[in-house]
Image (tube, rainbow, N blue to C red; front, side, top):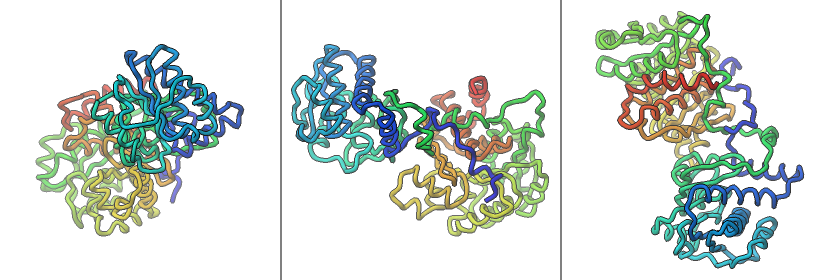
Length: 510
């Protein structure tokens, strides 16, 4: 694949706080720190202290039940219990399994706890104003059942606030999936870097407020670990974000093209075109079938209008190489005509965003699309499916048991394209393995046409020559911020109009 497509961009400095670590990578970070001379007991002490300080800062003093498991997560819990007791909090500690099962640093932490150790039971939270969950951490390797599941259910019934150490018991740290049963925490305190399971649904819903605490692990251990998963936030893509220049003009800022549907399906394309224009594209043209020209003309001002009728006409439009980015799919219609338009556009070398009907039109023959994307003439391609469209285009991957993150990565590799798998936990994945998870998408974005605007924002950034992975990540973040900026009552037409305020705040800090 030609390097110029931007699918294999230079990795950012991995010491950045946007890095997410898998459970195995976090274990490696611990091990590297210990190899460098920091005792494991010091890391455990720092972790417990971070949790205790977060509790003292957020909750009124009252009876606390600390629930500990047999591993290092339980060791952290012993430290939390001791430190809270030293601050005068009434603490009861409950342990899953015998004390003789504790090993290494966890056993040492237990030896420092001066109070009683009660066996974990379903009633462990009875009488407590707060529960500290230190039963199982992110590396959970089995379904939560038995006494632990009973305790989770009983505490949920009582609606006692829960503070989770590392991640709520029952949530898989790599996938965010619930394994058997899981706490709903008011606060989760994790260490050094967050994990994918903190951001992926449903794990994100179980974590409550997420705090990432420094426990003495040097950021440069990430240079050896080289993580490929990140939180989608500006420092991930700031170095390539297009900034206004005094000597810029409309032609230097790119010319985006959006393909409209027929007369009764034009709104989605206009939403996308407005998003591209607000995202900074110098010019935006709406390519319209003859039947929709008058409808589109009645609604457009700053977006230009150009008629086209079929794949040959679209090819002619894209022969003007100043038209360097194209979006097709919203309202385009499902069928052979859309497939032909997509395949013709791919031969132009323009950067492309494929959404909605452009994806579903290839549901029966996805291989034809993937081969065309991998072809010599194609430019970079970003696909923006929701789960339904993803399942139609990638049925084998969708039917697998992998997490949303794993599915997006597999699809990116298969399609040779950037995949934006949409949702409250939108995942952006590249063929080279890089991936980012959004954490700023709010419920107000669940409205018709929101995804069309997202496609347009990404298109506008591609038109300005932003690399495709970074453009997709930036587009998702801008889309989320625009929704939050408007708040309740949002409709899709509002999203492009919120971008100036979002960009006004963003650009000075990049």
